[in-house]
Image (tube, rainbow, N blue to C red; front, side):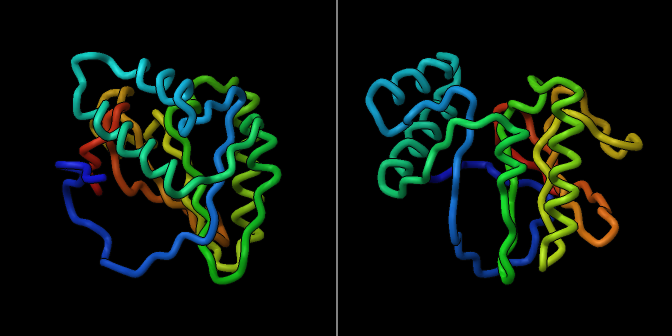
Length: 173
């Protein structure tokens, strides 16, 4: 799958990456590898967005070739069950669900992320995408989504990039 015009701005240094394990969590999971699941997911793409449709088809093809376990679980339970491993970086990512959590759920998930990071042997984790920015550090509308890295000890938070709600391009800071 190729994502045209995916990145803007300075990129991080090139480095080798091996994905040790992947898991998906959702309160109403869809099996993208089934024909019904594929049709449902494709129906969510607006007809005037052919690039998104092609990216989704590419992602579904990858999911069929490289499956990942999909769990029926809400965000608070999913994060509470995560473990970190020595010699690996735990990445916690979500697409757009953060805005649908209650303030209480957001606070619980944020606290669980902090706890997970404090236990991490490598002391680094990536915070989920969200719609907020802090301290006016970015001049975009609330419809922008940010990716941040939080490092422990201390939980220092750093803005890494910003993108639109529907993906590319990601502008790295």
